[in-house]
Structure formats: C-alpha cells, structure tokens
Image (cartoon, rainbow, N blue to C red):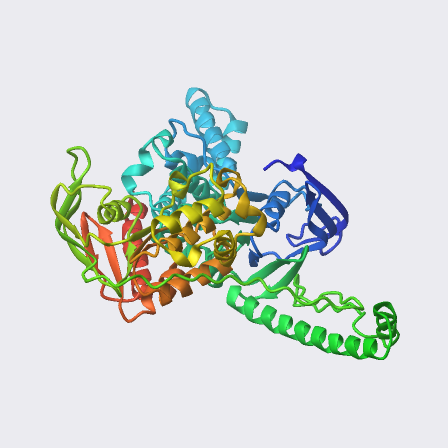
Length: 582
C-alpha cells in the first residue's frame, strides 16, 4: 500500500496544551482521504487520548487499514515528538535469530550497549577520565532502562507468541512468512512505542498465541489502535472504540459489544425519525404539494437541520450525525448465512481407529488417535501452531494415509472443507456464478438451479453484485472467502471441516457464520483462533467438544473455553519462569 496512490487534504491540527506542548494526545480535524476517486474519509476528525486502547471498526474496504497507514507515516498532522509503530509486514529473512531481532529493535539500548563495549575496551588499554565518566553515564542509563532484564522480557514475548525456547536461536531465514510476522509483532511489543498500531494482529496467530496476546495487551499502558475482526479480542483489550461510518470517525467508550449496543440504539432512533418524516411528506404530497415544496415546508418548521455533537469525555465524540432536511433511511449492513440440511446418512459419519501418522519416515506427528464424528458432532480442535491440527484434518479428509490404523468413512459421506489456502481449490478462470452452478449440478442441488438463484446465494453470503460475474482471480481475499463459504452450502455436506475460516471475514460475517454453524444439522469440525466463534458455534451446543492436539495426541478437554484459556495462560507462565533464571 503506497501513500502516493492516495489523495489527502486537511484543514489543520492541534495538540492539547498548545502547539509547543509535548502532550501525547492527538487531535487532527478536517482531513479527507481518497483513492482512485473513491472518498474513504471526508472532513474527519482524529481524537486520540494517551493511554487509551482503541478498537477501529467498520465494514471491510471502508478505509481502516488506510487510516492506520496515514497515521503511521504521519501523513496527517500528528506531532513530531510522538513515536508511532505499525506492524504491517514480516521481518526480512536473515541469519539473525528471533531473539537478536527483538533485542535490536530497542535502538537506544543497542546503541548504549555498543558504546559500553567500546568504552570498556578503550579503558582497558589506557585510562581516560572523560571516557570513565561517560562510561558511568552509560551504565546509569542502561540501569534506568533495566537493560539487564531485556533478554528475559524478549524471551517471554517470543514464548507468548508461540516460539519454543529452542526456536529463539534459529536463523529467521528458517521461518515461514507467518512466523516472521510474529517476530515483527514481538519487536513492537518489546520496544513499546508511544502509539502502537496493529492491523489484524491475530490473523497469523493460533488460538494459544491469541489468548496470550489478549492477556498481554490488557496491561498495555501506552496508546493502542487495533483493527481486528475478533470481537472477543476487541472486548477484552479495548477501552474505547472508533467507528469508521459513512466517511467519518465516531468515538465510543468501551469495547465492541458496548459500541454495538449504543450504535444500534442510535440507528433505531434514526429509523423512527425517518419513518415519521416520511409520514409527514406523504401527508404534504396528498395535500397537493410537490416534493420540493414539501421539503421547503419541513425546512420552515425547522425539523432535523441542526448538527448534534456530544463529547464522550476526553478525546471522544459520540456518534451524532448532521441531519439533512430530508432524511435518508439508515442503511443496515446485515449478513445471513444458510447451510442446507444434509441428506440422511447412517452414523457414524467418520472414525479414526488407532491412527498414527508421520511424514517421510520422521517421528510420529499423531499417535494412536481414536475419535468419531456423528450427525450432531460439534468439535473445536485447539493447540499450538505445528502441533498437528492441519494433519488431523487432512487425515479426516482422506488426503493423508495413516502410517498405522484406519480411517473409516461412510462411502456416501459429503465433506465441505474451508481451508486457509482456499485459493488453491478455486477455479480462478471461472466467475463466482459459474463456479456455484457447476458445484450445484455435480451435487444435484436443485435449490441453486439457474443464474438468479446462484446470485441470490452469493448475495446472502455478502458478495456484492458486481463481483458475481467477474473472474475469481480478480476478487480480493475477502470476496474469495465468501465464494468458498457459499460453495460449501452448494455442495450440501454432511460434515464441515473449517480451518481458520475467519481470516478474510468482517465481524458481521463471522457472527453470521457462527449462527449458521449452530443451526447446521450436520457435523462441524472447527480450527480457529477466534474464541468467540468457538463459543458461539461449538461450546454453546450441548454436543460441543474441545479436542486438544499436542505431544502427538488428540485429547478431549474436560472444560469450556474459559477453562481452556486459563490452562493456556498458566502453562505459558510456567514456561516463562525459566526466562528469568537464564
């Protein structure tokens, strides 16, 4: 994302306490951002109070990431003395280890350590009073920043983000892009900038790492702005919410659920005002007035013309829009997913009997796994990255053959799969409609016969109309995700195997997916870093189960998500105790 592709205008800015103030609050008014002729923000106001943790929310594609980028680059008038860090790309592959890269991120500490080493060498050769005095200053500065505890702090962060102790000393070039993104996040958490910007930080994390990051950021004392589709994360971490709505920024106290409750109440008020005005307009038209005359009559009565602006405390403005003389009906963004009831099939759907598996004569990834899926099974598979969750799914799908044991599957079983790498299974030369038609025909799904029914299905899954008839290769990641979800329904599956289905979805779509999975009459197996989706789709069902994958085993967990979260944090804290003694 390049700044030169965007147009920015702004009226001015101020910092609380005057232009020369060293305040860490931010106040920028009257700025607009557009790209390719599309206005993303218009005459908006950025109000950030130091020490608050903000969740930036709004539908996908409305400019949240663009706003973060403009803040990070100080393209809008943000005071020069405020240091800002945005985690936006993975660290470059090199021979340096994760531990080295994290420690080096604190440039001031690194410079002082280098100076200390240099001065100590020089003084070992010959004494110099000025150098000795400077060395004492360096020692004092290092003590003040607790430089001796830096390695322990860095290791704790790396452990929390899923790096076992042995990985701390591996070259970064040996890690995938996703793991190098975790190193970038670890560096940001380690140096603690005045303003930290996080754009979908949980996308590259497993559930265990998300639970740790959630707990860690709740104690974050500096300013934070985070974009995330994970509602539970936003509710837990954020003290305030910024809503990007109709090209403006509005401010609320509290996390996402608190914001949503307030926003829906305001939308209800606006709908009532619109309905009341429509009734008045109809009466005026019935009396013989034209629409223009009716509007003029309303204006003379002084209705709904004044701007309302409420201050929600320091640095916060509640959502109150300027009301025109003729109101427009408030727009509702609603997504509803529907999964058809599968045809009857004798249980069990699928069984793994004493299954063990290893890759290319290596050690067993999974050992003696016994499990089964029934028509009403609701299973969340949890565990750290690399523990074997994806391997287990591939065994269930029949993509991998057990080294030992047997996978038994009803020969008529239909499995709907959502993979993190869904692009690999999409026919990119086809349109979404063509893809859906072909799937429906191959599975005998008469409910999706014809172009119009396919388009209605895609629309229900939140895919905008223009995207129905262009090649899949031209769609964004979020649009492709919606096509894949719509495709699952088209295949009328008995079992849904979902591997991180939320990465490209907005909050409303994730809520809709949770509801659809809860209502689904077949079996559901879910791997997700989104704790709220697990609670909604799995734990809320009387048949909900949590399977923990680790140490080559798949073990049913006797507890709910709260219990699992506490277990993960307790285990991590025990691992981190070793950092303080190294």
